[in-house]
Image 1 (cartoon, rainbow, N blue to C red):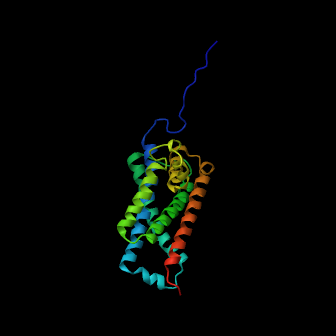
Image 2 (cartoon, rainbow, N blue to C red):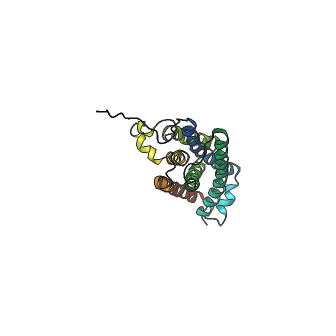
Length: 218
C-alpha cells in the first residue's frame, strides 16, 4: 500500500514575497495618519488665528461646515492614495489581483473615517502641537499595534483585542491585502467597507456634536 503524503500549498503569495504583505499594509498606515493630521492642523490653525470665528458667526450649519472640510481633505487623501498605488506598482510590482472597485469605494469610506477623527482632534485641541501629539498617539499606535500591519490580530491580548474592532485601519489593511493578494472581490470584502462606514458615521456624529457646541448661537 502506498502511504498518503501531505503537502502544504500556499494559495496566496506562494513566492512569499514580503512586498505583498508590507506594501498593501503600508497603504493603510500612511492614509490613516496624514489626511487626519492635515485637517487637524488646519482646523487648529484657524482657531489660533481667530479666522474660524467668521465661520461660527456665519449662516453655515455645523453639518455643512464639517462636510465642506471633510470633502476637501478627502480629495487630498484620494490623490495621496493614487500616488501610493502608482509607487507601489512601479517600485514593488504590487498590482491589482481582484476587482479594484471595492478598493476604490473602501478607500473613500476609509478616508471619511480618518478625516472625521482629524476633525474631532482639531475641534477639541487648542494648539497645533497638541493636535500633532494626539494624531501621533492615536493613529500611529493603533495603526502599528492594533491593525494587523506588523503583528497578527490574533496575538493582540485582551482587552486590546476588543479595542482593535474600533480601529478603521485594520479593516482597510485587510481590504488592501485582499485586493492586491487574494482577489476575492465583493464576496470577501463587503463587510470591511460596512465596518469602516459605521465607524466613520459614528466619528462624524462626535465631530458634529463638538462643532455644534462651539458655534455661536444665532
